[in-house]
Length: 88
Image (cartoon, rainbow, N blue to C red; front, side, top):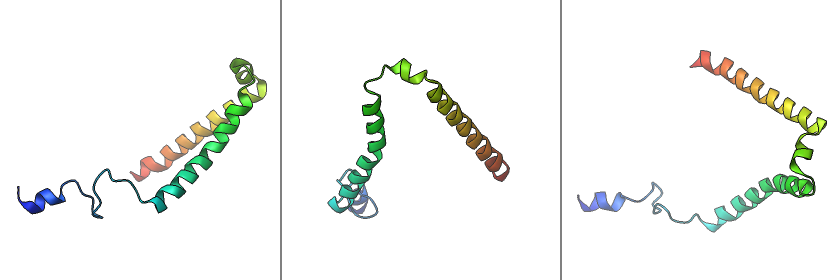
């Protein structure tokens, strides 16, 4: 293999080596966004920590929300398939 081929191997198009850390100006906002996305999950875990799991899951309101969520997921999947299959 010539010198040019071995030099290009292991580098991205931007000239950075594969596996190199991203720049700090990009890493800081990414971490902030990731932490912000974890806030609702952390709130739910803290809120549900004092309640036994099955008692929380078997409440009528929780079951109703779960049923509507499953219905919405199935409706969105069906609509996506109905739109995407003819276009494929």
